Length: 255
Image (cartoon, rainbow, N blue to C red; front, top):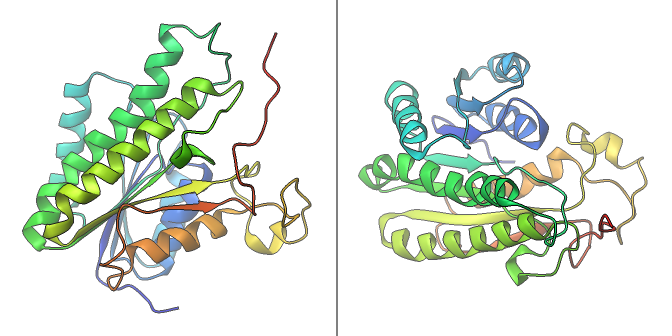
């Protein structure tokens, strides 16, 4: 794999989960600066992995469910202190299980603010620096089936927000395409163990056509593809990383 040297990335929500492995993996790839955001879980383990790879690590505490003005101030401070960033991997995206009939305003706001507004605000924060440099890579996470606006019983609010996110990303991709900036999305499948490495995933059975569990390294590979400097002709694309699943995994609705 060709190493990426001298670049800077902001990975949101990277204290744990898939984003933690992605942040550490990009440091391994040669990113010079890797900044992360976190909300509740301590970021220290992720920061240690980034530093062990030889990259400069920083963490900003940020609640993407806060008021927009507060989020914008915190992001602006992060970019000012640790940026500018030529790459954004927006991994924040809360998930709540609820039938649409029983979902309330809290679920609605959490899903749309946490998945759609968060990506919009994060992208706005890094775009000026990318435009000035004439280069940028933005990647965000959908869910399996979000590009098709597929039905997802028990996950209706989350699925609707993720489909809205894909529309937002595709529109943004078209709006910034002339500035050397690409915007793409990854749809992770039903990856139950977010810290699982590929070597262990190969030995772990799962209910998908390939038959083995997904890992953070599988998602990292897709991110690597999109953020490569030579990938300037691919934008507005959604790449499923699902083990062959063609739609949202089913969850039985609560009755």
